[in-house]
Amino acid sequence: MKYPLGIQTFSEIREQNYLYVDKTALIHQLIDSGKVYFLSRPRRFGKSLLISTLESLFLGQKSLFNGLAITDTDYDFTEYPVIKLEFTRVVVKQAEDLENYIINAANSYASTYGIELTLTSYEQRFAELVSKLHKKYQQKVVLLVDEYDKPILSHLNKPTLAAIKETINGFYGAVKSLDEHLRFVFITGVSKFAKVSVFSGMNNLTDISMNNRYAALCGITQQELETHFDGQINTLAEKFNQDKTALLAKIKHWYNGYRFEEDAPSVYNPYSLLCLFDRQKFLNFWFETATPTFLIELIKTQKFDLSLFANFEVDELFFSAIEPERMTPEPVLLQTGYLTIVDYNDGWYKLDFPNYEVKYAFNRAIVAEFGHTPAGDMRYLRNLSQSLNAGDIGEFIKTLRIFFANIPFNINVKDEKYYQSLFYAIFTLLGFQIEAEVHTNDGRIDCVLQTDSTIYVIEFKLNGSKEDALQQIEDKHYHQKYQGGTKPIVLLGVEFDQKSRNIGQFVEKQG
Image (spheres, rainbow, N blue to C red):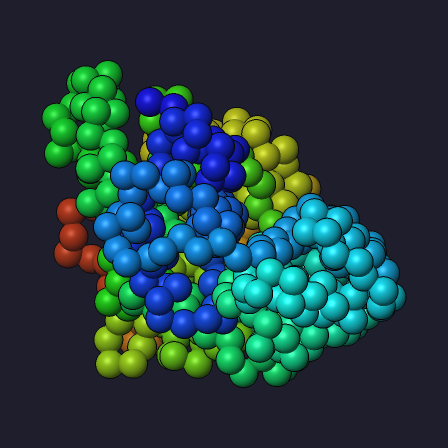
């Protein structure tokens, strides 16, 4: 079987006999139910392929859809003029670059369809193109916009952001005025920005990002996995000497878990699945496509506490669109695919990493960025794991100091969230169970770390000694919460040396 890795063009996939997971029944339902749509999905989730499929459909390329579900419907494959804008294809350094891209795209389509344009400004020229296409072909125009938010995300926290937004506002203002000339509009992106901020009051824009009916429009469901990849699953099961049920559980653990509505089925990231079956290895494929730099910077500048992931609950308003100037890490983590809905109860959504691949990728990126260690250098992490499993606290502290020694000097020692986030990411990455700021009936424990064999109750002292830290654990009976289990408990008091800006001395005691 041929896997369409890196191929986002529907016609090429169909003509060259690449694997295609049929989404055309949902696409027909979408077209039949409305006109102007917006869909937010993480990167590598098939948004560009969806746009390309819609392009072929509205161009009337019926032969490409032979054998697919939409040919069993009443869809007539009428040919429409189609305009497709892909904002990932343009490098926007200033607003003028974005204006020029829209002008050049309008000129290109005008040449293709044999239309002469006379207006000069980008929004007027685009509007002229659409109205003249409608008049010439006596068919309304289809507008497809892929990754609409790329220019905005490239200019977050930059002086150019306001001008970029103004340009985008002007463009969508023109789109709004063209309603009588438009047959269908579909816009995709990673982020959900407020309509008033970006879409210039497009009050007819239907956001299907959290619509149960279209939750599987992008992504692969469990049923689709077992139907379309049955042979590949059997091959992998044989290679790893596992029965099919065990292998499916492993695939699910690594790559499933994205839920885009509380009652929707979870789906797989298509890119990760295709890579798994192509390379026949369980690897962090999503991580290889790079973590968005703007997200890491947002976490750093706003000192986001990563330990919140342990029990992260939000209400419905959390999923509302955000303003580019007031972005916070939490909704961005959700929209970029690092968090997803894992549970819902009485109006509250519980969020967590969707799967092992994402959890590992995210924490590895945090460790590399916060600890300033090469992303591929896992020696220190391996030493930490080995020393903890062996109960060698001295070696554990010694290795941990390496990470803290690499923290830039401009990070204030009192920025506890920075240090806490690094500590949390390191041990999450190692696969240990870690809890930060654990509440008890007599206080709050800095950190509880569980290995396969031991529970470590850890207290750090920024302005105090290791003995003070240990005494606090004992005086407040922090360890009592974990007594009665099968694992031994180790109390660990650690002092933080402000002069060296690193972990200082420590003391340990059996709990």
